[in-house]
Length: 406
Ligand code: NIG
Ligand code: FE
Image 1 (cartoon, helix red, strand yellow):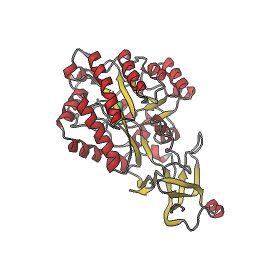
Image 2: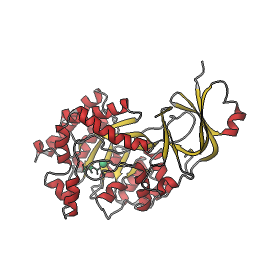
Image 3: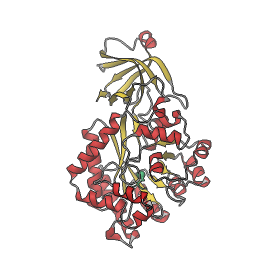
Image 4: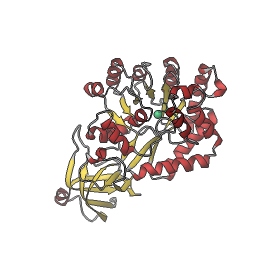
């Protein structure tokens, strides 16, 4: 028995297939069977190859529109209660992000609002945010915990993230970030809290709630020694690790993460040359988060040229969270990655597709190629560089996720 195929024709395909270049295919077509791309290439070749035929059950004319792989947002904190606009005001009145955190605000204030919210409330607010990203072409999102900060509430947030993946037309990867901040009940006892975080992991894994483990290694987060303990616990369970590394200061977190063959190190404004080399050797992806850098008005930028020279793959993600990056747009992050960090538009788009997928350990998406997932976005644009060039407005016209149009 053959799979019924859908033909999407008359497109300008941005396949991103191959190590560099846009992989442009004019007059392109996609054959979709189930949730997979069955065939990708120029329409004329399809007619010659005989891949088209009686198995095609439906045809969709894209009218010459630009088609890219579905966008992958590989770093978000999407599930939480409340908002932090008052902290934004406080920062404009002179307080720093670190001052606010040390005074019990910041992540702890979101923790309180998250614990107070019901599961349905957390789901509803996160779903609304997710739909905004999805309308701009996002087909895969990573979602971290990290605002529950106790066993039950961390599990609850991860459960909400899994439910988003089941109920929305969105691929969701979950990351356990218990080591995000010290909850008040462990004040003065960070090592005890880390021991608790490590104890929760097996149950989270057994419940199918976790794809990776993350930590916040910084002055207002946890020390490298504490981070190491979390990584050891993850490693013992066979779970891959990621790290919020070198965001506010250089803790040599990237060197530590590389030792554990981390999938990614994220933020990296204060990354050292040793960190760059360690990431290159370990094959760790650098996840750049220009929205957080912008919103916190950080004047230190990640060492993009050094990462490029060392061959470290660079992803671009939203870091959506209520404190350091309350954005609703991954496309805006592509623009900021270029204007603030000097990525090229091609690097930015690869960062939010091919490389974003790598940062999640996914090899089945992020490129338009036969055999991979049929995740793609249709844009009212004529050239792919326009994706990073414009900011504001939404040129995304149609989205197909797992072979199905949303
Ligand atoms: O990725 N740096 C740590 N975590 C988040 C911010 C969390 C918050 O302020 O609520 C980040 O920037
Ligand atoms: Fe983050």
